[in-house]
Image (cartoon, rainbow, N blue to C red; front, side):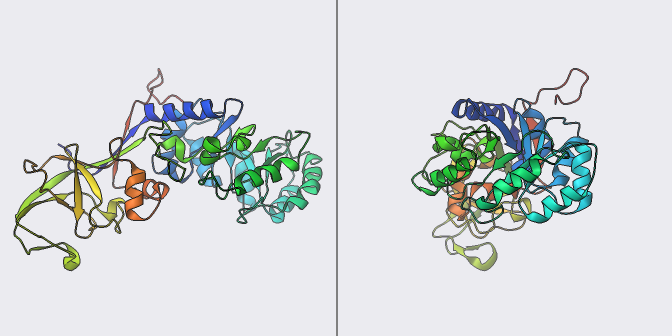
Length: 370
């Protein structure tokens, strides 16, 4: 029996969620976003299973290099582009597509001569005001880059949506309109749609879309659950009870004595904590599943352990399985309890949690099918 925390990764669910993207944006090509170690699920394993996507998207050059070193040959988009010439050289060597968002990147690209042209995307600031060129700078950039022999094929235009999680906010449509206005004749590839845009804003379903969190089975939309959107969770975070204690009324539980037993009661201790990535700030009452049944957390989250109110589960025993999030306990719900978002919870699962990948398709020679 395994006591340590595990993250069980369901690759069949990942393929299902990719198919959901295809149904929502049937005329779009897909950059499947696998940055941040595949949102905590394992970047190489996610990239391997997402083989029917048209390409993979990462944040940084080093992430793309890791995919290439694992044998993944699909197109890779680096959404933050490069900072220094060694990153540009690595991007050339591995054939990455690069997003440019500041003038210094354009200058470095033009100064470096090579026989291997790169595909380039111009990131346009249409309203998020984080990275990107102002729209009025784009016509000149398009002319410069389109004339540069180091740039392969048509230059792409992309932007990032600031408030697409709220389907009622008008900024999303406005951002789409601003990007499309830069290329009314559709000469250049466009990429707008993130997960929320793909699901809720048809104008963002451009020739290229970039789904992220929806691939991993969490909801990107305010007020909509993943189940309502027909998404399936890819990760189940699980552990086991390592102790069941009979405490008395008035006994204080955990650091700081933040919970005092209101009556004689059973308290379970499970082997997981903030050292594994479970949120330390999860409040008393946050649900877990013990043997498939809900029970609330009590006391503070420790580095290695959590305490669980077992008053409703009198038959609970050491070794019983505990689910922190998964198919029957959505990560979005736990994020809401913890005052954060599912993205953070998934990405913060630490390396000491054992990853168990299920439903991967092996290659005939014994390796992973790419």
